[in-house]
Length: 476
Image (cartoon, rainbow, N blue to C red; front, side, top):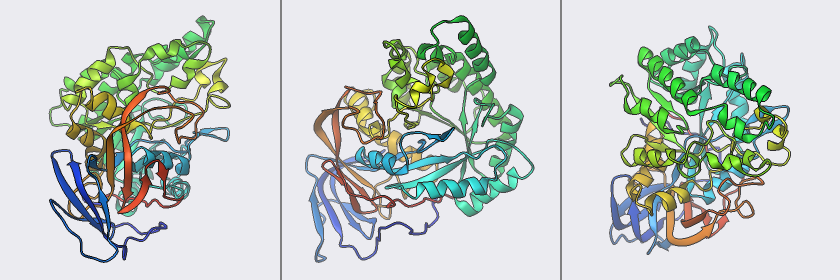
């Protein structure tokens, strides 16, 4: 779907800048790979080819020999400064979170508007846009529907027609706060289908989770992080996903399954009985690389890995990698939602149900998928680009402006150094978080340079963009 023109409210101006020529790079897209050059002018890709020259005075030439040249990453599932009540927010705001995103090669994010139940969508959207103005990279928004009343259909239409928001999220969990009963989820899907919008679904069976949480709190003396995972077994994801697909088929609504974590849920997709249903599936690096043994860490250490859904068995990552290779899963996002161990996660030291769920990841998605996917032959270079850039841009109405290296696209370009090596650590990451779930993980390959709309946003370890440089992306 084409994107609407956006208002240039950022601190950057595209027009009038000298052209920039990237030469001798190994260009990689979702479908192609070749040695070539890219000419950038006025924030857009002007030409792709071989042996390109530029004659304009002041033109900048970048020699990309030995580097991969990719479209910038698009992370369609992040939660910057997410409120969890009591004045507490996830530890990355839009400034710190997008700075980390750029350093990792991601040039666009899509976050969420999460209205309080009963709050007008327009009011919640205004508040979220104000918070997002701190963003360093370009950003879009999904609209969560957290309650249902007679005004919601009209408000959803306003989101699509006036605000360029073409995706809505519903939660099958968290019914005490933002989750919806099936009858209201069906109503959301029915309205979204009329608007040709897509519905994102968080699939977990809320009633079973509540039952298991109560059971473990009463019966298990050590109410630690391990019991958080035990209260959300794979079956609660699989059962909820099955119902979500049935509801979507009933409403003829395109759906997007967020953060699929394990094999039982995946089987519901593979054995999908609704052959004409438009279903896109997302997973995250944590479910591809980590497993539930992390919850066995001494003391309260496992709390860093508390997330929803939780980590699964050591077999599930193998199955998920195979699903990526065979295009059963189409997108890898991060569900970036970090909380500090000290002062946030430790709120649940005596009650696992009070541990805020989420972890930092937006900086490391590209490197983790390259190191543990491409280099280990689990996915190809082209699939790496498709999963982290092109497919999310296509699914959410940003392509070909984002996620593509084609004439006329925004010059969001990642120069990737495949020879660079390093380790992930909370001591060096740019996330505003005191821990990393990938602490000590070796990575090979990292960004050398990142461009957003033709400007150098990151170069050799330094983020050059300032707070407020990002632009709001309207989608058709």
